Length: 92
Image (cartoon, rainbow, N blue to C red):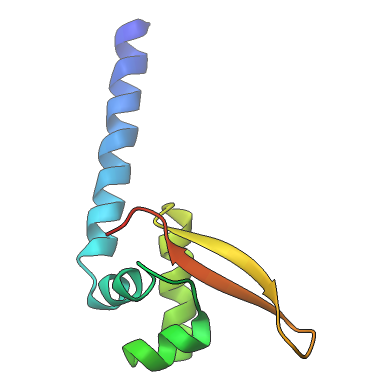
């Protein structure tokens, strides 16, 4: 039983590593991680700074967040709108 659990955990870790490696091999994901390494950025800021279409920016940000490479920070703008900012969690 212990061997089976260890093998299952090993498979899970290998799958997670594979997912992260695929994300890090993507040019846009690397640009987003670099842009958020020092200061949190909104999706629109990331889109314009990295020259990535908005839809792609949201998709890449969501993948990076799901893999715990980005964290989200909520903020209220001056006009009362809720804005999500994204910050590199790992220092990549």
